[in-house]
Image 1 (cartoon, rainbow, N blue to C red):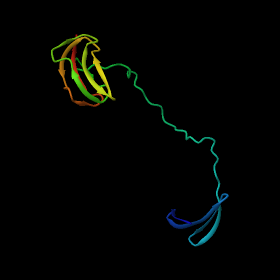
Image 2: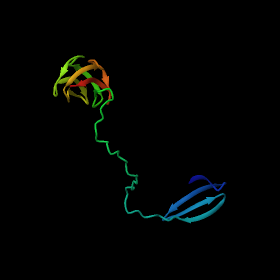
Image 3: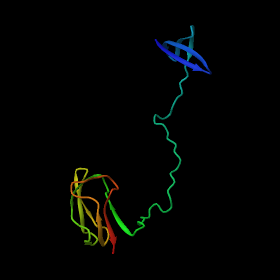
Image 4: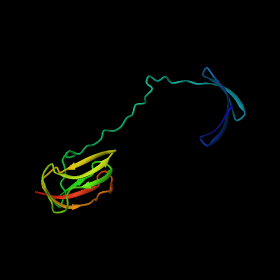
Length: 142
């Protein structure tokens, strides 16, 4: 036997369900016994259909935005630990030069320069932990 309490339109009901067999429930509501027939809705799929509004994408979402001060900021692509920094402020680097090595997802990754330029500042040191999108190095483009 299961007991339930319902409030419908401000009225309280105490319901005791005695049995449920073949779609017929025997229950007692506030002291009065009833036999109630349950209607089961048939579903054609077990997976619910999720309805979402379409995601609005700005027209220039694919364009890489340059920083206002003319610096190119190199950011951490994944969370990880900095193992070694190969450059120092003032160094001239060419596209493809090694900038630093970091460990992410149990793998050592070498971060290479995407552009030619001059290193302005290094925001991390060996042994530092970084999260995704942290600024690692700032460089001025040639």
